[in-house]
Structure formats: structure tokens, C-alpha cells
Amino acid sequence: MKSYMQRFQALRDAGDFAGIIDSIPYARLLGVEFAEESDGRLLFTLPFRQASIGNPILPALHGGVIGGFMENAALIQLMWVRESGEPPKTIDFSLDYLRSGKPDTLHARCEFTRQGKRIANMQITAWQDDENKPVAVARAHFLLN
Image (cartoon, rainbow, N blue to C red; front, side, top):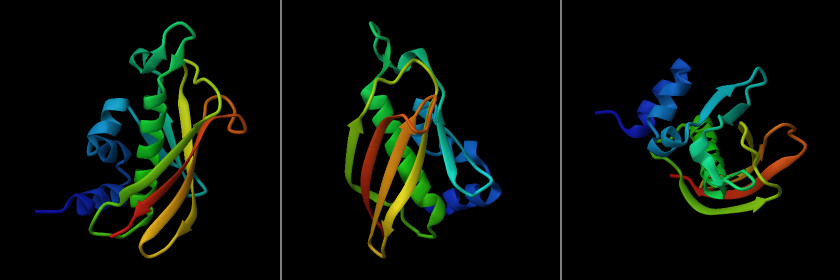
């Protein structure tokens, strides 16, 4: 029987982005999507759903939805670039909300600040209309196996 990472790597090698999301229950629940851009970077997208609204008065996306989307993006990004038999483990995830998320599609991109043998550090930025006006930024540290 194949391990989870072997199945993930087979889906990655086949370019089956939807298959990868289907293999991650929380990403599937949120409705996360992603694709590889021409420059090789991954762009993550969270299409708007009414169920993602946390404050119906504004209305604004729920902070937990934004945070969950960003953490999933970071984990997928890390698994995408690594050849490992084990998925990474989250050590720390720190999130700064910069503005309200409108009831619209949310995008995210991840950048490594450092990747060593045992620890990876990453910065994640989420935005809606303009990448230069982020809704939230996060810093994450992962234990690598």
C-alpha cells in the first residue's frame, strides 16, 4: 500500500491538482484550488462561498476560513517541492489580518524564507483584488522528516 506522500507525489507528477485537494479533507471542505503558474510558482485560490462568511453585517470572510486556507496553501507548497516519505508537521503558524476579506475570491502565494534539513520557514500572503493589498500575511515553521 502506498503512503500518503507517495500518493501525493504521484498526483503531483501527473499534474492532478484537484486530486491533491481531494486527498486533503480540510482543503476539500474549504474548496481550495491551486495551479502551477508559468514561472513554476503555485497560486492558491479560494472561490467565494456564502458559507465562508463570518460577519454577515459587513459582510466579511471568516478569519478561520482565511487562516485555514493559508495554512493549507503552505503545507501543499511544502509537500509540492519536497521528496519525502512523511508530510511536514506544523510547528508554528502566526497570522496577521490586515483588512477584511470581502465576499469574493481569495488568492494566496507562499515563499520560503529558509528551508533546512529539519525546519522550513515560509511566508504566506493572501489577497483579493490586488496582490499589493493583502488581506492577511502569515509566517509558518514546519518540522521536516
